Length: 359
Length: 252
Image (cartoon, helix red, strand yellow):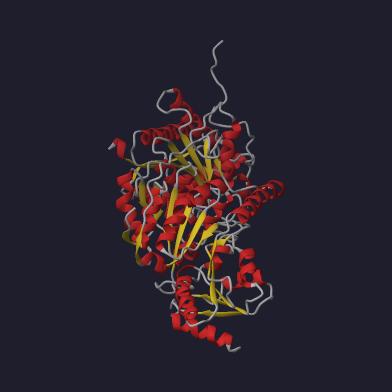
């Protein structure tokens, strides 16, 4: 298959359509506005629906409405907009609605700036909205990987009946890369496969099959049962859906942990330092929820590992999960930028050299 | 023997949780009857109905309306209904919302659903108070009306005059049909049902956004008996919130 040069945001949007998404609800916000722009032109071509909502709050609730019919639905936004969506995301999680949410992260807090950032890791994987819930959360580090994840995102969302979140830094959406775009998936709502959806129940049908899209369980007993059901799903996802990449870690004495675009910069550092004889490797979580704790521990706590360096474009958010995985068994260092500035290879290399010198 | 009256199919057997004298029971019944009649008249296929319940006293409406139902976040029912209707355009979609839900926290969603001319019907139940949380001031609370958060009576200088959603929404170009009704008398109950059914018919014809505001009592939080509450509604609410058609593009 031929490679096509595509901008990340447009490639992700096209991949969503090829994965069967026929409903997009969103609101313009930099640096992801190319996604709604692309969807507004493309959805009518495939018989789908693009609707510009009055706010991100409304957009996620439109997702709730459309996803409740069993359709494949997607919304996208960037950090401050994703904050606005949190109420609706919690409702989607509570009502067990499959859908896909894209967060093209920019600098924060508040209005922050419009440059790429990784500052919403906590918001994505540690909550965001209210209640005990999780989202299947992926942090792609290339446009191709974002496409590839999109192609199974709806399947996973439907399998577990939970929303999928893309935690993509702005660079993923803004850069152009040669990509291979998969074939169109033929998706149609099958009421048999989605017995919970609003697909046309009528009086006289089995009352158990009436579509009720709902997250309220007013008494303690029923809420306990409901949350236990959710936790069971999360346990299953934790067991089956962890994704990560180990890059040259087999004999690594220093393992760098990073996600998204930062991991790509680290890869270059690994290659450069390997050429100079330094045994450096990269551990990159691809699913940041569920977080690959065991794999990270196995890699980073191997006997030859002398230290771990976590690099992020934030003040050390994934660092907390790295620490939870390592549990003090190896020294962990951190290098981060705070103002949406991405680290250079030289900066990361200097930090690794400092570690080797015991600084 | 022929059946002259039977249980409305669009309501479940679940017992309402509403307080004695509350008007939700009447209004639920009118909505259900209107849908049922459209099915019986062959205008609507059974099963092609989706309702959206709000946050407020009618939060459990999904347990009462016997069709596919959503329970939406507070104020977001029109956005949820938008998503549902866009996904299944051949379906009759309605939202059922109170005044805190629609006229306060959900103003953006209702205005923009109307603005887009969404082919949905909103049943807006206005009882001038927050019921579920126990009687706080609503944007629709009348001037001078005492609530748990306006214990000295609503002060217009401090928090504004009550908002008139029907008049406001009738100014939105995308709104097709807006009428304010009440269920305080038999005649008004019949008028309300007629209005609700007309709104549903407009939706089936693919017209724009329709809203039926229904003035309603809240004996519990008004601190009145059901009968006194009806009288209070007539003497205080109807003069400020005049009944009648505010906009009907179909009649123009």
